[in-house]
Structure formats: C-alpha cells, structure tokens
Image (cartoon, rainbow, N blue to C red; front, side):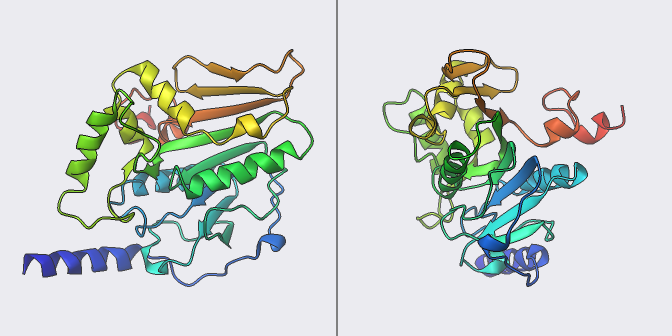
Length: 274
C-alpha cells in the first residue's frame, strides 16, 4: 500500500510540472544573436530522479529571463513528462540526444550552463561550444556553471581521491533501496562541494570536470578558473595582456547573481528587500 501511494504521488507531482507539447527547432534554424545565453542540458528526472537540480535550474531560468538572456533547453528522446522545469517557454527547445551542440554558438561571449549530466551530456555540450569558439574570431569568453543546477554522480572520482570514501558513503545513502543505473543516484555539483571538505581539494575536483580546453585552444589563449571568492587559478598563461581569455566560473547558484549581497545560507527573498 505504501509503495502504491508513493508511485501515485510521483506520478501526480510529475504530471503537475511536465511541460506541454512544444515546437522543437532544427539546429540550422536557430540563430543566437546575443552576448549571453543560458543552456539547460536535459533537465529531466529520467536522469535526475531525485530532482536534486530542479530548484537551482528554475532559479537559473528565472535569472536569465529577468536579465533578458535567451534560453535554450536541450532535450533528448526520453519521455517528455519527466522534464521538470517550471518555465516551459524557453527561447528554443532543441533536440540533442547526447548534449551535442549543432547550432551556431559563436556569437555569445558568455554561456550560463545548467542541467547535466556533468560528466556526460553536459561535457559533450561544453566541448562542442569550446570547439566553435576556438574556430571563431579570438575573443574573451566565459562559461558560468550554476552549481546547484547541475547534477552528477561523481564519475570523475576514483579511490585515489582523498574525498572518495566520503562521497561514496554519501552516494550509498542517496541510492539506498533504489534501482541501479543512471536514474537515481545524483547529487548537485554544489552538494558535492559540501562533501569535499578541503578547499584545495574542491578546486582540484572542479579542475577535473572542466571540458578539454587544453586540446582545443591555441597556446596564445589565457585560461582561468574561478569559484566564488576562492583564489583564481590560471590554468594556462597566454603570454601578455593582449591574449584572448577563456574563463570558467563556478557560481553556487543563480540566486547569488540575483542577490549578490546575501550572506551564505541566508534567505534570499529577505535579501532582495534590503
């Protein structure tokens, strides 16, 4: 009886948030003529069944719409009823089975990224984006990760990592009694940072999950990585001040950009009224 009630509650909640039928654009018909864009990769409980990234993803789309930033939802062929975004009206819905980017993304200099899977479909999307940038006119570019809107199951971690045992134990709790496979055990990237206690190890892990900038850009590019108020890391020196710069910026949440004066852990709605 309890199992039946659980299944019914999941079905009801899923039906309540599922987006209605919508037009899916062909990549060749998509034209991004903006300096910034938000890309949401597979925001679906097919892959994030805990809905771990849902709140962060909704805040990311709210932030983008508030700033007039175009939004692209990438969707695959998994059941549409499992896509869980509150906002069902992005600028474009685009089919992308594995996260591949087949539309022109050379114009924007800033990409906000959300969704997942961090190490799989999102990695594919980011590698395609970097490749287009490398083939375009050299410019300063930035990728902004919304960490509470990105789901992952730690595929880049291994037993040699000093935080592996803590992460593995946490995943055992998350996945307890649930079926195996890709559907259940997901955490947000921000939650992963909470498991990794040492600040240096946090930065090392973020470095591990970056797309392959090192095999994509010429040597004259400067490449940097930042996370909040932590020390910036220069991953590759371009040579001088004229070098085009690629920056990977990790932000805890889109809320931090909407309410930048809030203290960590505070209620952002209250901060907005200060």
